[in-house]
Structure formats: structure tokens, C-alpha cells
Amino acid sequence: MQIRPRAIIDHVALRHNLALVRRHAPDSRVWAVVKANGYGHGMVPVGTSLEAADGLAVARVEEGVRLREAGITKPILVMEGFLLDEELAAAREHGLEPVLHQPGQVALLERTRTTRPLRVWIKVDTGMHRLGFDPREVPDLLVRLNADPGIAGSVGLMTHLAQADDPHGRFTQLQCDRLRALDPAAKHDLSIGNSAGILAFPASCTHWVRPGIMLYGASPLHGRTAAELGLRPVMRLETRLIAVRALLRGNRIGYGGTYVCPEDMPVGVAAIGYGDGYPHHAPTGTPVLVGERRAPLVGRVSMDMISIDLRGLPDPAVGDPVTLWGAGLPVDEIAEWACTIPYELLCRVTARVQMEHRLKH
Ligand SMILES: *Cc1c(COP(=O)(O)O)cnc(C)c1O
Image 1 (cartoon, protein in one colour):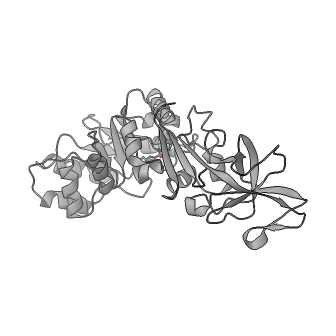
Image 2: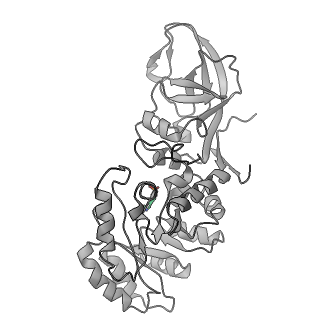
Image 3: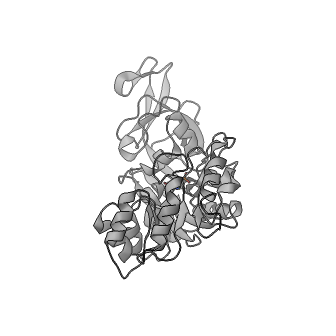
């Protein structure tokens, strides 16, 4: 029996979630976002499995190169674009589609003459104020890029939504309007919607959408569970009980002794901790599944272990499977307990966890 925690990746669920994107954005092409190692699910296996996506989106050139080296031939969008000459050269060599968000990138493009034209996207800052050109700069930039023989085809226009997780917010519509206003003659491909946009704002479903978190089965919307949205969890993070202890009333558990047993009680120890990516901030009370039943974590999370209150479980035993998140225990719920977001929990599962890909049921 192995102690090493496993992340079991359900590719049937992954493809189901992509199909749900299609239902919400039937007229859009889909960049499946696989940055950050496929949100912790394995970038290459996920990218390979999402055969039905029109393209893949990553943050950095290096990620795009790895997808190409794995034999993936689909369009690949690089959302942070390039910074260095070498990155631009690699983008050209591998046919990646970089996003231009600051003038230095345009200057670098214009400085390097090439026989290999590149398809590029302009990132427009419609209000998030992270990356992008001011909308007023875009018309001139389009003229400049259209005249550049190093640019293939028509330049795409994209923007990123800052508040689409609030389905009642008005800012998202404003951002969509600002991008559309830059292309009155409909000559360019536009890309707006992330997962939250796709699910809550049809106006963000332009020529291309860019779903990330919903593909992995977590909810991008406040107040809506993944299950309500029809999403299926893709990752199941699991381990086993490596000890079952009979502790006494007054015993303190773990570092700092923060949990005091209120009575004589059985306490299990499961082999997973923050060294595997389970959040150190998960407090006493955070649920886990022992077998199929919920039980609360007690005391602090250690590097390799957590303790679990086993009162109320019929017959807990060493070796019992323990699920930290997955079907039956949404990662969104654990994120809430740990005061973080599901994105962070998923993408910081560490290399110490064994990844197991289930391509079929
Ligand atoms: C990460 C990212 C996405 C995907 O966002 P989700 O909320 O995971 O759907 C889309 N667009 C950009 C620019 C991103 O950085």
C-alpha cells in the first residue's frame, strides 16, 4: 500500500466541461487555458486531451514551446507575450501567437525582420489596469502593425475581465463595450470571455473565448456552486490514513497544540500536508472525506500530515482513503475554508503528489 498522495485527473470530466463551454458560447472559438501546468492538472496531458478546443492558451512562451515539443499543433496563444529577443524568436519558430501589451514588444517586433510572419494579438486595457494598451492608443497601433510584413493576417484584439465573477456587476458590460468599440467595421477577431464571462455575460462570448477554471470543474462565480453550473470536478486529491489514535480528553493536537480534545476520541492522521500543496491555512473544521464520509480536520496542517476528528465514523482504519477535494467535496468549499481561491489550491499541488490520468471511465 502506498502512502504517497495522488491527484487523479478525470479526463472525461475535463471534456464534459469543455462541452459546457461550447453550449454557453456556441458561436465562439475556444482557447482552452492550460497555463500553470494546466492549473495543476498537467499541461501536456490536459492539452492533448482537449482535442476539441480550437486552440490552447498559456501565459509564457516557454509553456507554448513545451506544448509544441509534445507534438501539439493547434494554435497557441501566449497571454503575456514575449519580453526578450530569444522569446520572440522561439514564438516565431514554434508558430505561437503572442499577445502584445506594451510598446517595447512592438518595437522589438519591428526591429527583427523575418521571413516567418507571426500572428499577434493586442491586449487592450478596458479597465482592469493590469496589462494592456489604453484604448486610445489602439487605432494607431493597428495601422502600424497592419503595415508590418512580419505580421500574419489580421491582428486580434483581446481584453481581460476584472469583475466577471460578480454576475450582477455592470463593469463587465462596460469592458465588453469598450473593446467592441475599437472594431466598428468588424475586421478583427475579438477575445474577451474568461470562465466567469462565458457563464454570466453572453456579451463576452466574442470570436474567441478563454476558459480556464471552468474546464477544471471549479466555479468562477460568487454564490454559484460548480454543480449548479453543471461542471464536474477534474482533480481528486487523495491520500490514506496512516494512523488511528485513541486520544484522551484534554490532549492537544499538533504544532502549537491549538486543538484540545473535548472528550476521549479517535483521531486519524492522513499523509498529506502543505508540502504536497494542501493549504496550511485550512483551519480546524475544514472537511475531508474518510471513505465517503465527511470528517473535520483538527489542529494545524503540518508539512506531511493532517489530523482528523474521527468521531462519528463507524470503523475507521489505517489505510482508509482520505479525499481532500474532488467529487463529493468541491475544491471551492476547501478554498473558502482556507481563505483562498480554488485556482490557487489546484495549481499549487506539488510534484511530490503522484499524478494519475484517467482517460476513460
Ligand atoms: C488565466 C486567464 C484566463 C482564464 O481565466 P479563468 O478565470 O480561469 O477562466 C483568461 N484570460 C487571461 C488573460 C488569463 O490570464
